[in-house]
Image 1 (cartoon, rainbow, N blue to C red):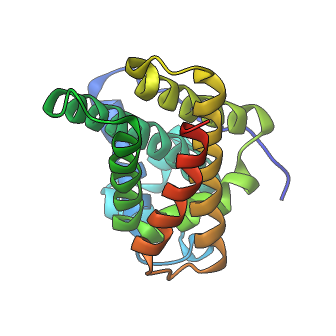
Image 2: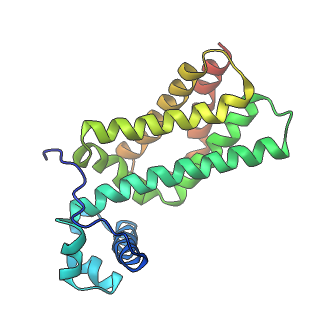
Image 3: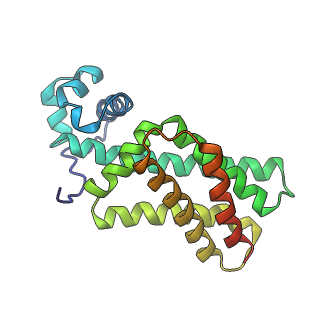
Length: 204
């Protein structure tokens, strides 16, 4: 499938329009948790969202545009949640070691992905099909910046490089695991393996 940018026909500006577009996105997320993306129809999305087919085409050209925007939203939401947890951990444990801090953040990230496992399997699969290189790079930069922000209070050397490597390890382990084993269940083992790899970069 050729790559194409997200094609949102109408960017919602008023609250009602934003609600309508989000209802379509939420309906697609609900369906992605129940079935494969290629089985989902636009009519199913509109029925769950409570809007007509014409309304769908006011906002999107095709269902792939919905999936592309979902990928973007889910990645941004995950990053925001992890950042919030990082602040909470440092507030509750001001003297925490960086290795313990990162382990807790890894656990939180994996738990959030596990709780929406089918959706994340689809995200990892479709990200390569629907995202342009520019969009993919933005998502990559977003997550690398997240880790930079999370590690900033520890004033470690080579901050940017360490942040990049932590994201490479976590993203690579999780993405490849779920693409090969969509029903993967050994999350504690995966978390331990990721922790070992990340420790090596933190102790450099």
